[in-house]
Structure formats: C-alpha cells, structure tokens
Amino acid sequence: MAIASLIHPTKLFSSVRWRTRFTIWTFAAIAGIAAVGFTKLSDLALDAFSRVTDGRLWLTLLLSPSLGMIVVWATTRYFPGSQGSGIPQAIAATRALRRHEPVTRLLSLRIAIGKVFLGALALFAGFSAGREGPTVHISAIIMLLAHRWLPNQRVIRAPDLVIAGGAAGIAAAFNTPLAGIVFAIEELARRFEARTSAVLLSTIIVSGLTAIAFEGNYRYFGKLIVGSVGVDVIPAVLVGGVVCGLIGGAFSYLMLLPQRQADTQLWRLRKRYPVRFAGVCGLLVALIGIASGGVSLGSGYGITAAAIDGQVHLPWYTPIARYVATAISYFSGIPGGLFAPSLAVGASIGFDLVRWFHFGIGAHPVVAICMAGFLAAVTQSPITSAIIVMEMVGGHAMVISLMTAALLSKAISERFGPELYQELSLAFDSRPRE
Image 1: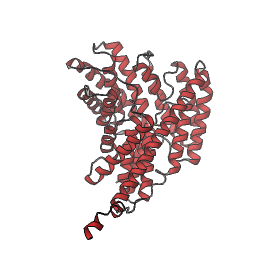
Image 2: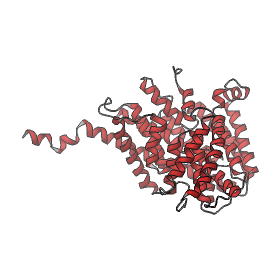
Image 3: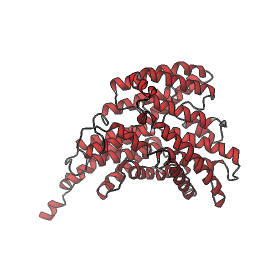
Image 4: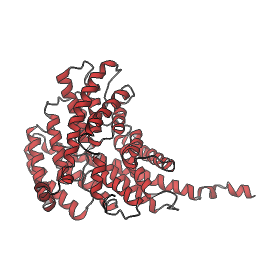
C-alpha cells in the first residue's frame, strides 16, 4: 500500500521536481514563440523598408533620421534599458542577481516589449542592426520571469535561468542549438556547472523545438555549399583569419569608444541630446546607403543570403559601407544587435578576398571562413562564432578550418582591447567592479 502510494501518478506529477520542470519548459516554449514572433516582425519590417525604398533610395533621407529619433526618444522615455544589443544587459544582470540586487532596470517585461517593437521600427528605418542580440535579451527576460513561478525558488538560481534564456535566444535566432550551449559557456556564464547543465539543455531543446515548429528547420543566410576541403584551404584560413582579426578587432575597439572616452565632446553631446544625435546618425546611415546603392541598409540578412545564392553581386566596397553603417547604427542608441551585421561584413570581406586572391577553392568556403573570423574578432567568442557558421554550412567538413580562422582572428582582436560584451556590460553595473 505504501509503495503504491509512492508511485501513484497524481503524486508523482505533483512533486516539486516535475512542477519545476513543467514551469521551466513552459517558459522555454514561450521564449521560442517570442523569438519566432520577433523574427517575423523583423522580416516584415525589412521587407516593408525594401518595398518602400525600391527605386527610391532618397526616401531613406526622410525615414532613417525621423524614425531613428522616434525610436531613441521612445527608448529613453518609456523603455530605458532596451537600447543596444541586450547581451551586455543580460551579462550584467547575472552578476547583479548573484549579488542579490534588483535587475528590473536590465531585465523586465517592459524592456522586452520595447526591444521587440522599437527594434523592428529601427529596421524599418534602414539602420544596420540585427535581431539576434535582442532575442538573447528577450529570452533571458522570459526565463527570469519563470523564476517567480517556480514552486521552490531555491531549487534553481535566477542567474542560471537568465543564462539558459540567453542561450536559448541564440539557439532559436540562428536555429543552431549547439551554438546556444557554447554561447552560454563562452560568453554568458564563463563556466559550466553541473546543476546548471540540465536547466540549460532542456531550455534550449524546448525553445529550439518550439521555434522550429513555427519557423521550420531553416538555415540562417541560406545554405553555404562547401563540398570537401583539404590542405588547399590553408591559405584562405590564414589570410581570412588575419584580415578579419585586424578589421574585426578595430571594429570592437570602435564600439567601446563611447564607454572609454565618455568625456569626449562627441559622446557628451550624445548623452545630452540623445534624440538629436540619433537623427544625425540616421542621416549618416541614409547617406551611406544611398552612396553604396543600398548594400549597407538593414540587417544585411537579405542581400548576403542573395549573394551566397549567387543572385546578386556585391561590389568591392560593401564591407566598408556595412562596417561604417553598423558602427553608426550602434552609436545611435537604437535597440539592435551586432551578430547579423557582423556576419554580413564577414561574408562581404570573403567575397572581396576571393576576388583579389583567387584561392582556387570556390567562394563559399572563403565566405564561411570570413564570417566566422569577423564575428569571432568582434565578440572574441571564437568557438561560438565557428559553430554558428558550421551549423549554417550544414556539415562538419569545415569545422577545423572555421575553428582555426576564428581562433586566429580572436588572438589578433585581443591586441585591440578586451572582450566586447563583457566590457560593455560594465556600464550596466549598479556599482563598480572590485
């Protein structure tokens, strides 16, 4: 009788353990739905911008400054904390939660709402920004909300749920579950604890499966066909790794200037007049877009995917235009990330290297190498960068080449300064780090 009562289904599934799992999985599914919804909204915004400005690029002179000012005004007035990528906020929040400090200024439902709608509006304005960092931010917020609903909040720590949510955001945004796990270890948590692993893995699986159920098993930026590679890929790995390390390291250094040189006149003006500053940034983004024939506008997803599929030919100046437009977009203060623009810059660098060096291995392997290399140089997360691109390639033929290029780029980028997201997260700490 006692044994029967112990294994009774009602008691089994009403246990704290199962209720905890059910709560986490439910919010992980919500995070997956949110990721898909944000993706759809971002795609609609990009498509609408493309239709409105098709053959009328001069309209960006109106759209980018005016909508940029509206986005930054709404961000500063109603949704503070939603600006930028969102990954630094998630990192800062994990530190604050470990110190038992409130994190509503970093992670809240209000911030998530602002991230979604203002981020999409910024894409409709033509700014060069991505949705991946914001998806990390949104998923981290949703998983932190799950902590309030746990039957026993001491079973799982709030910082662990934030980390799991951020990892699920990367997995859902790129459809790359392995990259989500590595991103959590390499960037968010900086370590992997046994008691965190089950939460992390189950959150990524449920969130990823939910995203696939709605979005389908797609490949980000299309499919890179690389075939088999041998020692003939070595020159491309070395050249691509060095070039992307230098350019990406300089970009990472550039992103930290407002934080490092806060007393400079330019950044004082940005702090004092954020809305006007955003308008000027929007005007510059528009001018660069017009001068480049539109290759620098938007996230870079569409035109890069078309170039990979052979539908369009990217001019040689594409990486320059995209590079500058992305930096200006980030400085403007809009909600938006760096992953998609960085991958787009890396891809366009790869096409240029193929044009100039004639490696003899086809364009796609070089493009994949430069995508991994440039992203690794910007974020200084080489394993995550290599795995994201590897999963986009859809095979393991280039795993060693991608890892080597990413590690080489990261080693060069380190000479320019510290890790980008870790350094940016310091600006969101409520007290100085000791």
